[in-house]
Length: 121
Image (tube, rainbow, N blue to C red; front, side, top):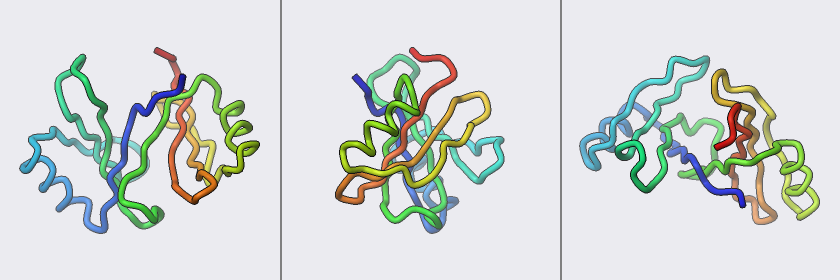
């Protein structure tokens, strides 16, 4: 079964969102050292229940939160999504040290991500 493993909170002003969530909820947030502006969010101690996520600029996203689901095969999952009335809207793209990622929409237009990690847990 495929489970959500990551969230992205979109923001018109990511710096202020970082400040808000770190102060209001105690999240530990650090800027990712990758090719895009992206802030990684740790919501709790390793091994505790819950998922971690990120804060990202809202420029290319039309909804406030985007969940990413870990999958065994990106290609097979994209095929399944398309055969069920959804669509791939971006990707696949390689995320260095993480895996292959794509954004999709369901038949109602809700955006979500799928990730085939380098190492499947």
